[in-house]
Length: 384
Image (cartoon, rainbow, N blue to C red; front, side, top):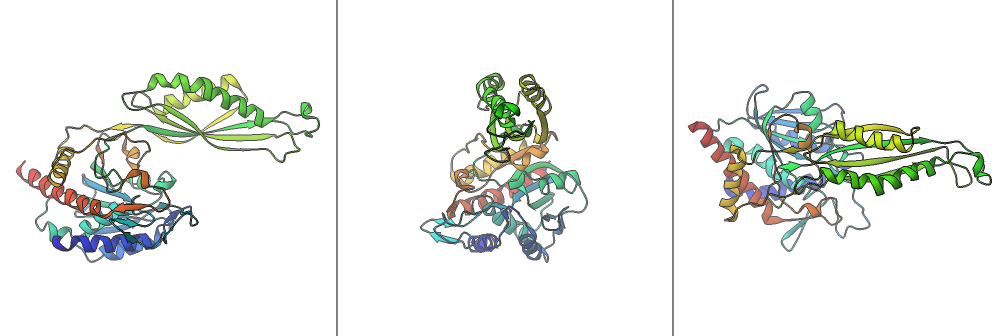
């Protein structure tokens, strides 16, 4: 079966791209029904699980129960395409020169297609496999993942000792990520006619005063938390306020994205941010929305060593260990003391980009890396 993998993987990717799973709303029902049917007659234990009927997740295991295992994870939701920017149909995979164009081809349906093919052919590729493997195809990653990987972890539907994520890295490695949290700041004022603004309290001006000091003072304070190539950052991402131009606004709110380094924790960093804002304006309400701590995997763990060896077999050179700008679903396992490794085909700069494209050969090289890895790790486990 290994000799036919190229044609089959491209066909799978074409099918995955054709099924809309874009966020919002990020519904994965049709796509995961397709995956469920594709895996149904294999020897895997396949489940559809989710708290939202429109956003189920696939879990496929080669073992019974909730034993520790290697978990492969790919998210199958995408961002919403801007159709005016696309030169091809985003829902139809099209090969142009050496690239495959289509929505999600890089982020993250490319790795999903490879992992799905390996799951389907697992018994044929590895008839005597003893290592516990689990494949998950999850939703909601583009919405920070509460109905996807976080749900699977909370419900103890997966139990990884090693989590291998498929986000695009050009098949290199990401083994550490900054933490992240989101917070909402709410300001109340008092309405008045715009012709007599002194009779009201302008909530937007109150918010602007806080934002000014966040940008000019707070950003400098948090640089002390920079760690190696990780930077402690803050961004104002959303702002809402006011009723009309001729009314003194009685309400304003904005959202903050805070990226934290290994030197910080979500709990302490949020409290520090909240106290900074309250000292500027004690009437401000600062609400914690969501967040997870940073993680850093041991680069000497057996599974990473074997993945590195597999990479070298394919590329005849050592892999790069890349810094991560964004965050992956690995963040939900940051406090679990497990190996978290991100490796996937495609250039991360293509993710969320119109006319998204995957270099076709990287798909096949990814398959070879994962195939060699499973073969070697199973051999190692048998000898130990």
